[in-house]
Length: 195
Image (cartoon, rainbow, N blue to C red; front, side, top):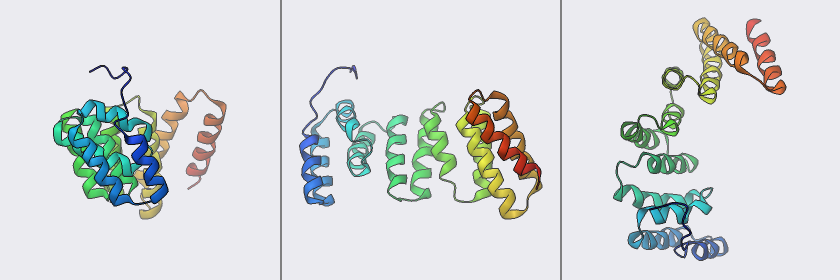
């Protein structure tokens, strides 16, 4: 189905507006699940898009989408992100994004949430290293790797982690084109080299 085609919102706008008035999340979930039960998965995803910043809308809809499309990596990433935002925890999120990575190994969102969901700092650095290797042009992943390596070097007085952070920031500086970005990276590197 062409996602650019206009579609009805499946009544979600009214359901969300009523939720905003009542604040009854149980009713919201029930009503979205009822809509989701009879909607086409692609149409449901389009109808939910205007409410993408509301995990309480995304979760019941995307749970149904994934039930119908269990290998839809992007849907798993959307649901995992909503779970993360609502505090469902690293285990639930990690399992879902691991499935998403398996379904689509090139889905960077799955890789990012996979790394982010690791609660052990050293293992999180290892995961960000894997993400940066899988997507060498992904500056956000490399910045997350460097940031986590700095945290690890501070938490455990780890010189190898500090060296990894410096090298990663240096590679980002070599690619930086915006003056503000260059200044921030240079300032960070000066501070790290003094340690």
